[in-house]
Amino acid sequence: MSEEALSVSQFNQLVKSLLENAPFLRQVRLHGEIAQISRQSSGHLYFTLRDADSQLPCVMWRAQADRLNFAPNTGMRVVLHGGIGVYVPRGSYQFTVTGMEEEGVGDLYREFIRRKNRLEAEGLFDASLKKPIPRFPDWVGVVTSAEGAVIHDIRKTIARRFPATQIRLAPSRVQGAEALTELIAALESLDRDPLVQVIILARGGGSLEDLWNFNEESLVRCIAGLNTPVVSAIGHERDFTLCDFVADLRAPTPTAAAELVSPDQFEIRQWLDEQMLLAEQKTKFRIRREKQILSEWDSRLRDLMRGRIKLAASELQALQMQANALHPQSILDRGFSITIHRAKRLRRLSDVSPGDELQTILADGSIDSRTERVHPKK
Image (cartoon, rainbow, N blue to C red; front, top):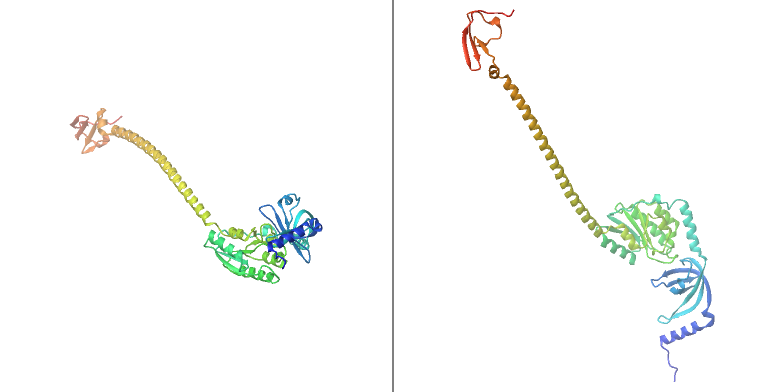
């Protein structure tokens, strides 16, 4: 009778037991370079340890990760303490890290720092060179792969935030030997497009090697020479490339880049509503203010007119009194008389001769007389 066959789970469990209980695999020291590191929301660290010829998946549970006195990053050279672990459901093994020491940085990371320092010393990353990002662009250029989640997320985000914004994609490979030439060509083509007002350079996350094209000097200098502002959105938030430093604006993710170049239509509507309400309030306040001013001026004008009328009436009364005082009848009433000679008022003694008929007008009547003698003033 043949020996009973094992199930896959039984076999994986047997391998787990053999490997994890092997004395020479329980406490091991390894050194290498960190790649593709990620810290989960649970606090656990997952990464790959590699050397020139091989790589090993590693996990460091939160309890041990929280005791680290430095932040492990891609490209860092470390010494690990731990042992082998087998994940039965997938039949895979990983190195379970119980301790980690910093050994140094890898060759790629050292080259990244060297290039960064040299280009920074040239002034290529100066803030004074940064071009402003338009607030309401009609056309947004995008340089990324034509396939995958990145362009989908950018399109979806812009369509949600401001549907009027149009996207012009210049597709390019974002990884591999031919990607660098395609990236530069795509950027230059969008820069020549008169419609494009801002360019997003984007790709998803990856290891330092995966993102290395975005640390190439020719691509960095290409971005520096563009007339169109560039927003870099390369990798995840923790990933930095030299393109991030030379770009006019860095976004932590491609989705964030789409948000930065497209206004939020709901925020705009809310702002417009607030501005309309504010304008309405200002208009009402202005109307009330103008009414108050008009009322004050009306009151002042009325007072002024009343004063003018009163003064004019007083002046008129004075003139009336003066006119009355000069009226001939008033003169006659005061005891004076008027002599009429030949239908004219007699003014001079020389105008009359003896025998002339005269009429003397008094206050209560007149007297007709004839001149007998003329007595000139001595």
